[in-house]
Image 1: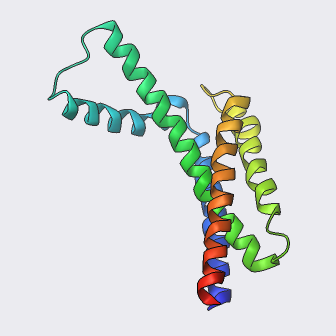
Image 2 (image 1 turned 45 degrees about the horizontal axis):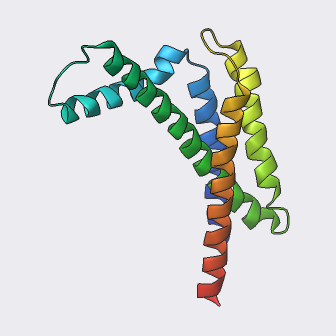
Length: 154
């Protein structure tokens, strides 16, 4: 059972990395289209279907879109860090700290190799830092889960 769990964690880790790279390989309008649609629908429901009719509303809307996209960066890397930590922990025991290095490396490769070679995209250190926030949060969450599991298990 433990071996199966380990294989599932590695599968989820590699799958998440490929998913992140596939999103980064799309131009910004394609990758942001999903977020834009969700935010537009949500704001439309909040404002009872009213349109954005002044510049302030449009500026605020763009800030909401930007915030949502960066929040998704954190969540993607939180998840990636979580499953990568569990994969490393269950495979190597004492070397699970390497998962931090691996996930931050994924963020750097994503920004400076994948996005740098995608039309309409450009790499930023700011995005690597945002991804790293998710990485650290996921690592800490994983560590907490393992500690709680050990306590419960005895």
